[in-house]
Length: 408
Ligand code: HGY
Ligand code: MN
Ligand code: MN
Ligand code: MN
Image (cartoon, rainbow, N blue to C red; front, side):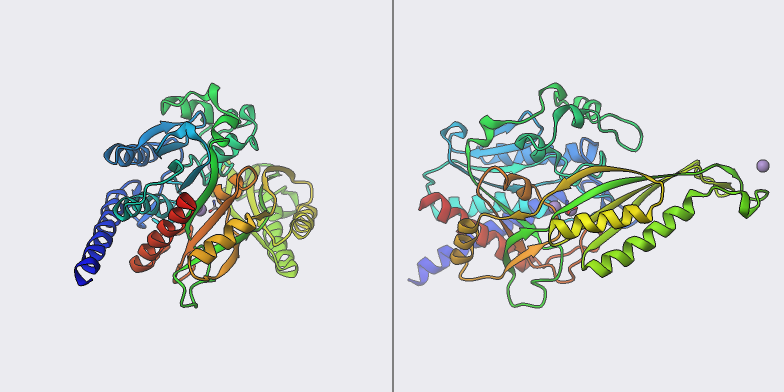
C-alpha cells in the first residue's frame, strides 16, 4: 500500500515537472521587456515561435500533428479520422501587453493532462486531441477568434482575407508569409464532424473564484459581446492660430462619447470600453482630422447590449459606426457542464464576460470550460497571475474530466 502510494506520488510529480518545463519554455517568447507583458499577435514572429513550440510538444510525445485549413494546430492521440474525438486546448496568441496565462495556460495544461493520462495508464476508447486555435485575441486584425470562427463558418473567408492590421497589411498576406495558404480558409465541416466534445481550460478573467476555497470552476455562459469602430471626422488646422469657434475638432466628440459610454453602461449594469484609438494626423500642434476609436461592449443579455450600443451611438453624433464583430450569448452544453462539475466533486459554476474559442465551438459541438482561479482577477495585463498550485489542480481536474469523457 505505501509503495503504491509513493508510485502515484512520483507520477504526479513527473506530470507537474512537465508542466513547469513547458511553462518555462514559453515564458520568454514574445515578452515585452519594458512591462513584462506579451505581444504574440497572430502570424508574427512571436506567434510563429509559439506555434513551433506546439509542434515540438506534439512531436516529442509521438502525437499526430496537423495544421488545419484555417491555421489551427492539432496534436492527436489516436486516429483523427475515427470520429467522436475529445478535444481540449486554447490559444497561444495575446493582446498587446497581455499576461502569460490567458490562452497558454489552457494549452500547457492540455499537454500536461495528456501526460497525466499516460502515466495513469488510461487507454482512451476515443481519439483525443490538443488544439491551438489561431488568432483568438484579434489583437492585430480586429476580429477575435478568427481560427475557430472560420472553422465553424461564422466568419466569411473573403471578409477575413480582407482584414488589415494597423500597418495596412492584409490578413491574407500575413498568413501567406507565415506559410499558411489563405485561399484554403473557411468552414471545415469535415474537421468539426470529428469532434465529439471540446473542453477549454482558461485562467479566470475576473474574481468569481478569488474569494472561494475553489481553485477550479466550470463555466456556465459567456455574455454577448461585440466590437464597433467609430470614425469621428473633423478638420486639421493649426493649434496656435485657429480660434476655438472656428474649429471642427473630432477629439471633442470622441471624448463626449467615452463619457456617455461610461455613464450609459453604468446605468444598464453592463460594460463599455474604448481601449484603442487612432488619431490623424496625430500631431501635438494640429487639430485632429480623424479620430477612430474602437468600442468593446458586453452585457448579460443581448437586449441590454443592443440597447446600450444604440445609446452610445446616439451620443456619438454623426460619427460613422461599423460593427466589426458580434458574439451572441453562449450557454455551454448543460449535460456536459453538469458532468464536469460532478466529476470534479461539485465546484462553482460561473458565467464570464470574456470571449473564448469555446464560445464559438459551442455553436457546433458540445462544449465546456474550466476556469482556474485568478487571485486578483486581473487579465489582459502583464499583472495577470495564477498560483502554480492552482494551475496544477487545474491540470489534474482537466485530466479527470478527459478520463471520464474518454472512458465512459
Ligand atoms: O476579449 C476577450 O474576451 C477574450 O479574452 N478574447
Ligand atoms: Mn484574452
Ligand atoms: Mn483567452
Ligand atoms: Mn508651423
